[in-house]
Length: 187
Image (cartoon, rainbow, N blue to C red; front, side):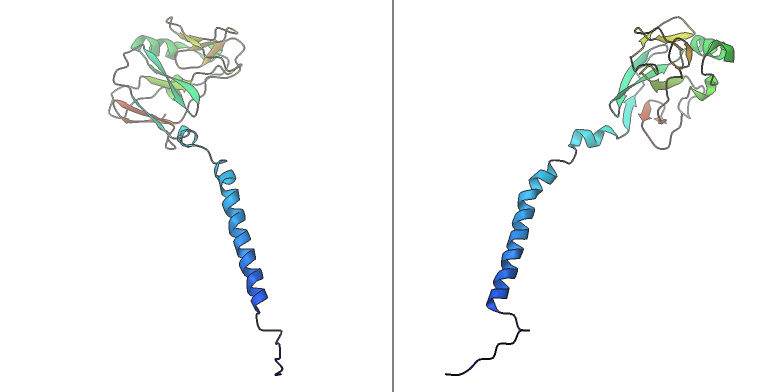
């Protein structure tokens, strides 16, 4: 009989089986865990919710307001009349709870001669109700739940709401296209 010497530094068949079994177990665990990990990703609707919203404003008449949704929240888009702009401009600091100049609240396309658009949150800053439209200038919106009254540009006139309706970032891409939710806010 010949005697074989076993060197401890050389791999054996048993070492190979241990490594192969370990690798197969790791691949199997990853394959088993992947469906559970993958289901935690947000679906396409959630990923798209934060994207800017493009609105065609060419069909909105003067004095008309629409509600658009961005990031799951409603926003008013209102085309102001000259009378509404004049009424909002005539308000003084003493007429409102959270004063802000009217020219900081209205905007419009760069090509247009006048800025006559207001884009603001449609959630009352008191408890989040959606104010209803009032056609009496300078009042623009009234919260039916608790009585907060906002002017045509979303500035708080009276009621329990502590601050003005917030302005989202927005920009006019053209005279008929408004983009709400852009990082380069043109408001």
